[in-house]
Length: 345
Image (cartoon, rainbow, N blue to C red; front, top):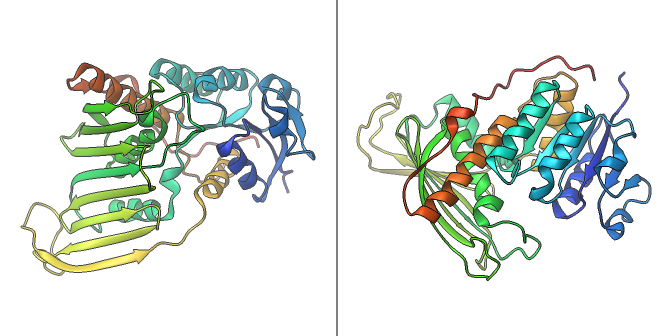
């Protein structure tokens, strides 16, 4: 039997703490070290090796690191790990700019390392079930997709706005669920808190096949809302990622056994709703990274997919600033591959 994979978490804020808890429950992985500039945060892990930053971990025989530091530091921390030959799971957004995200992706690819970006919304059980059913053709043609993501103000997030902070999830989900990259965007944003970042945003996305998607974002709401609405040949499908519920308002115009291609009309049918059980997203992500390192089948979000998400959010902010449609730089992002490669671990 192979020895446990030796892991470390860099950055012990909210996300880093959740990663540490998830790693502590994964068979075949041993959390052996943590790093954070705050000694008080490090003190919460007295049984682990502690360092102030990534350089203090490099001689500690690590198989991989989780990078949960502020977004502005992802490039420096990630490049240090890549140079040291250490695999990495990097929190979203992959980097603060498209150029930095591309440099990160190239660094890990050139060294043949396993690397992923933490788009955990894909691993919400309801969204994962939706993706499976879409790929199976259960809902037929997908006409359009809309997302709503609202949150109370996160005092801990001070270095970025709502588009880069939580909108990054939705641009990733749009590409993931439709199977198509976003080719251009239009958007408007507003800042209410005086911190110089966007707090409200709406964006309209055109996919490369002409498909439509829209996003509505805020971090000044008195509630947490995570909703996806899909218009399909089989009717309207909505997913509440908070309650993990899928609700299908069926299209009565589609007869039993009829092909779900082409528009055959739309009329009200019965409503079907399901609560979806499944593992916690951070736990599922940790399992996938372990399996990737062991050379097993996995569904990691690749760094190239992380690059694509950064490209889309960068275009949304540019569109809001310029007041015009902006193309997304997809031509420089090679199509991601989910092929499983042999791993020495």
